[in-house]
Length: 242
Image (tube, rainbow, N blue to C red):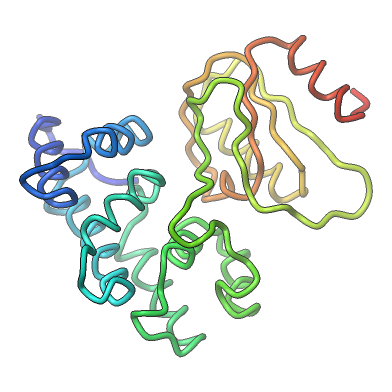
Protein backbone atom coordinates (compact mmCIF):
# COMPACT_ATOMS: atom_id res chain seq x y z
CA UNK A 1 0.00 0.00 0.00
CA UNK A 2 0.98 3.63 -0.27
CA UNK A 3 2.69 5.51 2.51
CA UNK A 4 0.81 8.03 4.62
CA UNK A 5 2.08 11.41 5.60
CA UNK A 6 2.39 12.25 9.27
CA UNK A 7 -0.15 15.00 9.84
CA UNK A 8 -1.47 14.56 6.31
CA UNK A 9 -3.40 17.32 4.59
CA UNK A 10 -6.52 15.95 2.81
CA UNK A 11 -7.54 19.39 1.55
CA UNK A 12 -4.09 19.87 0.06
CA UNK A 13 -4.32 16.45 -1.60
CA UNK A 14 -7.74 17.28 -3.05
CA UNK A 15 -6.41 20.56 -4.41
CA UNK A 16 -3.43 18.81 -5.95
CA UNK A 17 -5.61 16.15 -7.61
CA UNK A 18 -8.00 18.78 -8.91
CA UNK A 19 -5.26 20.85 -10.52
CA UNK A 20 -3.26 17.87 -11.78
CA UNK A 21 -6.09 15.96 -13.42
CA UNK A 22 -8.83 18.49 -14.08
CA UNK A 23 -6.89 21.75 -14.30
CA UNK A 24 -7.30 25.03 -12.37
CA UNK A 25 -10.84 25.54 -13.70
CA UNK A 26 -12.22 22.15 -12.65
CA UNK A 27 -15.71 21.62 -14.04
CA UNK A 28 -16.04 17.98 -13.05
CA UNK A 29 -16.57 17.91 -9.29
CA UNK A 30 -18.44 14.62 -9.65
CA UNK A 31 -15.36 12.98 -11.15
CA UNK A 32 -13.16 14.19 -8.31
CA UNK A 33 -15.76 13.03 -5.76
CA UNK A 34 -16.00 9.61 -7.44
CA UNK A 35 -12.24 9.19 -7.21
CA UNK A 36 -12.13 10.02 -3.49
CA UNK A 37 -15.25 8.07 -2.53
CA UNK A 38 -14.07 5.09 -4.57
CA UNK A 39 -10.65 5.08 -2.89
CA UNK A 40 -10.67 7.10 0.38
CA UNK A 41 -7.07 6.19 1.35
CA UNK A 42 -5.91 8.49 -1.45
CA UNK A 43 -6.35 11.41 0.95
CA UNK A 44 -3.55 10.02 3.10
CA UNK A 45 -1.03 9.38 0.33
CA UNK A 46 2.20 11.31 0.20
CA UNK A 47 1.83 13.45 -2.92
CA UNK A 48 5.56 13.72 -3.61
CA UNK A 49 6.56 10.11 -2.92
CA UNK A 50 3.47 8.10 -3.85
CA UNK A 51 0.48 9.83 -5.39
CA UNK A 52 2.40 12.11 -7.75
CA UNK A 53 4.55 9.37 -9.32
CA UNK A 54 1.53 7.09 -9.75
CA UNK A 55 -0.57 9.74 -11.48
CA UNK A 56 2.43 10.71 -13.62
CA UNK A 57 2.82 7.06 -14.64
CA UNK A 58 -0.74 6.86 -15.98
CA UNK A 59 -0.44 10.25 -17.66
CA UNK A 60 2.80 9.21 -19.36
CA UNK A 61 1.41 5.83 -20.41
CA UNK A 62 -1.69 7.36 -22.00
CA UNK A 63 0.05 10.32 -23.62
CA UNK A 64 0.79 8.29 -26.75
CA UNK A 65 -2.84 7.16 -26.98
CA UNK A 66 -4.11 10.72 -26.82
CA UNK A 67 -1.27 12.08 -28.99
CA UNK A 68 -0.68 14.62 -26.25
CA UNK A 69 -4.18 16.09 -26.61
CA UNK A 70 -6.44 16.13 -23.54
CA UNK A 71 -4.33 13.47 -21.84
CA UNK A 72 -5.12 14.92 -18.43
CA UNK A 73 -8.88 14.71 -18.95
CA UNK A 74 -8.55 11.15 -20.22
CA UNK A 75 -6.52 10.10 -17.19
CA UNK A 76 -9.00 11.91 -14.93
CA UNK A 77 -11.89 9.97 -16.43
CA UNK A 78 -9.93 6.72 -16.21
CA UNK A 79 -8.95 7.14 -12.54
CA UNK A 80 -12.35 8.46 -11.43
CA UNK A 81 -13.85 5.24 -12.80
CA UNK A 82 -11.09 3.00 -11.41
CA UNK A 83 -9.62 4.87 -8.41
CA UNK A 84 -8.27 1.70 -6.82
CA UNK A 85 -5.50 1.74 -9.43
CA UNK A 86 -3.83 4.49 -7.41
CA UNK A 87 -2.83 2.04 -4.70
CA UNK A 88 -0.25 0.21 -6.80
CA UNK A 89 3.45 0.98 -6.59
CA UNK A 90 5.08 2.42 -9.70
CA UNK A 91 8.57 1.16 -8.90
CA UNK A 92 7.60 -2.31 -7.66
CA UNK A 93 4.67 -3.15 -9.94
CA UNK A 94 3.47 -0.74 -12.60
CA UNK A 95 6.70 0.27 -14.33
CA UNK A 96 8.27 -3.24 -14.41
CA UNK A 97 5.05 -4.79 -15.69
CA UNK A 98 4.59 -2.11 -18.36
CA UNK A 99 8.16 -2.70 -19.52
CA UNK A 100 7.53 -6.45 -19.74
CA UNK A 101 4.28 -5.88 -21.62
CA UNK A 102 5.97 -3.59 -24.14
CA UNK A 103 8.84 -6.04 -24.60
CA UNK A 104 6.48 -9.00 -25.04
CA UNK A 105 4.30 -7.24 -27.56
CA UNK A 106 6.82 -4.87 -29.06
CA UNK A 107 4.34 -2.21 -28.04
CA UNK A 108 4.95 1.46 -28.60
CA UNK A 109 3.52 3.96 -26.12
CA UNK A 110 0.51 4.56 -28.36
CA UNK A 111 -0.53 0.91 -28.04
CA UNK A 112 -0.95 1.08 -24.26
CA UNK A 113 -4.53 2.02 -23.45
CA UNK A 114 -6.82 1.85 -20.43
CA UNK A 115 -7.48 -1.84 -21.00
CA UNK A 116 -3.78 -2.66 -20.86
CA UNK A 117 -3.11 -0.41 -17.86
CA UNK A 118 -5.85 -1.94 -15.78
CA UNK A 119 -4.63 -5.44 -16.57
CA UNK A 120 -1.04 -4.45 -15.80
CA UNK A 121 -2.07 -3.03 -12.42
CA UNK A 122 -4.62 -5.52 -11.19
CA UNK A 123 -3.85 -8.99 -12.47
CA UNK A 124 -2.28 -11.41 -10.04
CA UNK A 125 1.25 -12.54 -10.92
CA UNK A 126 0.12 -15.84 -12.41
CA UNK A 127 -2.72 -14.27 -14.39
CA UNK A 128 -0.42 -11.51 -15.61
CA UNK A 129 1.97 -14.13 -16.98
CA UNK A 130 -0.92 -15.94 -18.67
CA UNK A 131 -2.15 -12.65 -20.09
CA UNK A 132 1.27 -11.90 -21.59
CA UNK A 133 1.49 -15.37 -23.12
CA UNK A 134 -1.89 -14.80 -24.76
CA UNK A 135 -0.63 -11.62 -26.37
CA UNK A 136 -1.57 -9.00 -23.78
CA UNK A 137 -4.89 -7.26 -24.24
CA UNK A 138 -5.83 -9.28 -27.32
CA UNK A 139 -8.93 -11.32 -26.56
CA UNK A 140 -8.76 -10.56 -22.86
CA UNK A 141 -10.12 -7.04 -22.49
CA UNK A 142 -11.15 -6.36 -18.93
CA UNK A 143 -13.09 -3.34 -20.06
CA UNK A 144 -14.03 -1.73 -23.34
CA UNK A 145 -11.84 1.11 -24.50
CA UNK A 146 -12.98 4.30 -22.83
CA UNK A 147 -15.49 2.54 -20.58
CA UNK A 148 -15.14 0.71 -17.31
CA UNK A 149 -16.78 -2.16 -15.46
CA UNK A 150 -15.03 -1.19 -12.26
CA UNK A 151 -16.01 -3.16 -9.19
CA UNK A 152 -17.73 -0.94 -6.65
CA UNK A 153 -18.37 -1.90 -3.04
CA UNK A 154 -20.78 0.92 -2.30
CA UNK A 155 -23.59 0.35 -4.78
CA UNK A 156 -26.73 -1.00 -3.19
CA UNK A 157 -28.08 -4.18 -4.73
CA UNK A 158 -25.96 -3.84 -7.86
CA UNK A 159 -23.79 -6.66 -9.09
CA UNK A 160 -20.20 -5.69 -9.85
CA UNK A 161 -19.35 -6.89 -13.34
CA UNK A 162 -16.27 -8.71 -14.60
CA UNK A 163 -15.56 -10.57 -17.83
CA UNK A 164 -17.28 -13.95 -18.21
CA UNK A 165 -15.15 -16.87 -17.09
CA UNK A 166 -15.14 -20.17 -18.93
CA UNK A 167 -16.05 -22.96 -16.53
CA UNK A 168 -16.48 -26.70 -16.52
CA UNK A 169 -18.94 -28.23 -14.11
CA UNK A 170 -21.45 -26.55 -11.79
CA UNK A 171 -21.08 -22.92 -10.75
CA UNK A 172 -19.83 -22.14 -7.25
CA UNK A 173 -20.90 -19.12 -5.19
CA UNK A 174 -19.44 -17.72 -1.96
CA UNK A 175 -21.52 -15.84 0.61
CA UNK A 176 -19.62 -13.40 2.86
CA UNK A 177 -21.42 -12.03 5.92
CA UNK A 178 -20.65 -10.07 9.10
CA UNK A 179 -17.74 -8.25 7.49
CA UNK A 180 -14.93 -7.41 9.88
CA UNK A 181 -11.29 -7.68 8.81
CA UNK A 182 -10.37 -6.32 5.40
CA UNK A 183 -7.48 -8.77 5.25
CA UNK A 184 -9.74 -11.77 5.86
CA UNK A 185 -12.15 -10.59 3.17
CA UNK A 186 -9.25 -10.16 0.75
CA UNK A 187 -8.08 -13.71 1.44
CA UNK A 188 -11.59 -15.03 0.75
CA UNK A 189 -11.78 -13.12 -2.53
CA UNK A 190 -8.36 -14.41 -3.57
CA UNK A 191 -9.31 -17.99 -2.72
CA UNK A 192 -12.60 -17.64 -4.59
CA UNK A 193 -10.68 -16.46 -7.66
CA UNK A 194 -8.22 -19.36 -7.46
CA UNK A 195 -11.01 -21.94 -7.25
CA UNK A 196 -12.97 -20.33 -10.08
CA UNK A 197 -16.01 -19.23 -8.12
CA UNK A 198 -18.61 -17.50 -10.25
CA UNK A 199 -19.72 -14.84 -7.77
CA UNK A 200 -19.26 -13.57 -4.23
CA UNK A 201 -22.44 -12.44 -2.50
CA UNK A 202 -21.70 -9.81 0.15
CA UNK A 203 -24.36 -9.66 2.88
CA UNK A 204 -24.65 -6.75 5.30
CA UNK A 205 -22.97 -3.37 5.21
CA UNK A 206 -22.27 -1.78 1.84
CA UNK A 207 -18.88 -0.30 2.64
CA UNK A 208 -16.00 -2.51 3.70
CA UNK A 209 -12.24 -2.65 3.40
CA UNK A 210 -10.70 -5.09 0.97
CA UNK A 211 -6.98 -5.69 1.45
CA UNK A 212 -4.60 -8.48 0.61
CA UNK A 213 -6.56 -9.69 -2.42
CA UNK A 214 -3.62 -8.95 -4.77
CA UNK A 215 -5.91 -7.80 -7.57
CA UNK A 216 -8.22 -10.82 -7.48
CA UNK A 217 -11.17 -8.47 -6.78
CA UNK A 218 -11.15 -7.86 -10.53
CA UNK A 219 -11.47 -11.57 -11.33
CA UNK A 220 -14.67 -12.45 -9.48
CA UNK A 221 -18.13 -10.85 -9.65
CA UNK A 222 -19.41 -9.39 -6.40
CA UNK A 223 -23.00 -8.58 -5.52
CA UNK A 224 -24.18 -6.73 -2.42
CA UNK A 225 -27.37 -7.60 -0.54
CA UNK A 226 -28.57 -6.51 2.89
CA UNK A 227 -30.10 -9.71 4.31
CA UNK A 228 -29.46 -13.45 4.27
CA UNK A 229 -32.99 -13.96 2.96
CA UNK A 230 -32.18 -11.79 -0.04
CA UNK A 231 -29.04 -13.85 -0.62
CA UNK A 232 -31.01 -17.07 -0.33
CA UNK A 233 -33.63 -15.85 -2.80
CA UNK A 234 -30.94 -14.72 -5.26
CA UNK A 235 -29.10 -18.04 -5.17
CA UNK A 236 -32.33 -20.05 -5.47
CA UNK A 237 -33.28 -17.93 -8.50
CA UNK A 238 -30.01 -19.04 -10.08
CA UNK A 239 -30.78 -22.67 -9.33
CA UNK A 240 -28.02 -22.91 -6.72
CA UNK A 241 -28.26 -25.61 -4.08
CA UNK A 242 -27.30 -24.20 -0.66
